[in-house]
Length: 196
Image (cartoon, rainbow, N blue to C red; front, side, top):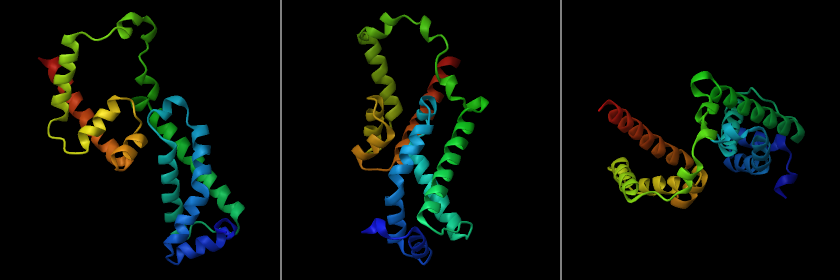
């Protein structure tokens, strides 16, 4: 069975250019590392960072630094301990990055949310509001090519980047790139409207 192969042998095979060994290392540890990352990503940070992305970064670092000779693996326990340490370091660095003053995820939450009128959010939008929203949506999606409009639609329906990527058959990075571009377009539009 694949899991019975010693970690040291797998790492050595990968160093020799065996991509199957790299896939086996990933398959053996990725799910458990993802579970650990999820435990350490708080709700606010989770709006910006997904455990899957952390784990992808962990393996990129592991494979690069192992290839450069920085890591020596003697047994499976040592490999697991190393991967866990890299994972926790990645989560900590992401938390520090996103809690920095200008990027603070806490600032995304409206401080006066308790004072907002709940009836406003519970009611159905008026015809004028729907029409205005559709106009803005048309402006934001102008020039997008398939599957980009579908990515925006699924995002508006509340799907995560991972779910959208699966649905439209692309990577999470593509989803984030499209949404970032649309977000920048929306910010420019809002600045223009404020300056009018």
